[in-house]
Image 1: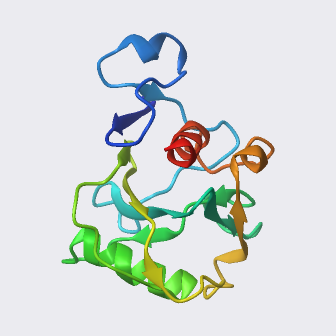
Image 2: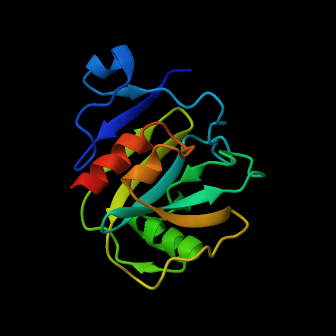
Amino acid sequence: MAPDTVVVRGSCPSRWDAGPAATRRTPQIPMGQNVPMTMSADDSGPARIVTAVLRDGDRVLLCHRSAGRRWYPDVWDLPGGHVEEGEDPKEGLVRELREELGIMASEPSGPPMCEIRAATFDMRIWLVDRWTGTPVNAAPDEHDAVAWFGTPDLDGLRLAHESYLPMLTAVLVT
């Protein structure tokens, strides 16, 4: 299977450390070796995923996926989820943040800051730094914890995707 394609937008790092593929026009980053790929529920094509980097000053919020999850177990991930049939991705992001964290975010006005595309999924990632409410683990069947992390805390985390560390570091620097 071909590596994921990472489309860089906005505040994402301008160069990804991805070996020889980093010299290509569209950077390529291979998936983590020990993490299963996300699959579309009906095999009709790539799953459409929307996620957010929730930033509060010098920290970001991540969700720890439960060890028993079928896909990406026991890793720290961005809050978000699958876009429902007929749903606009921006509306899906607002819904997912409400369902997973109990917060109300405004629909993003611009394009995603990053996109990760693979044979089995297409993930759009937006930066969200304003919302109403206090984020809590409103989806304990999906996550066993939610927590805030600053730049020094990120290095030791097992993240769901290799691109997250440089992306989150770049978001916290700006």
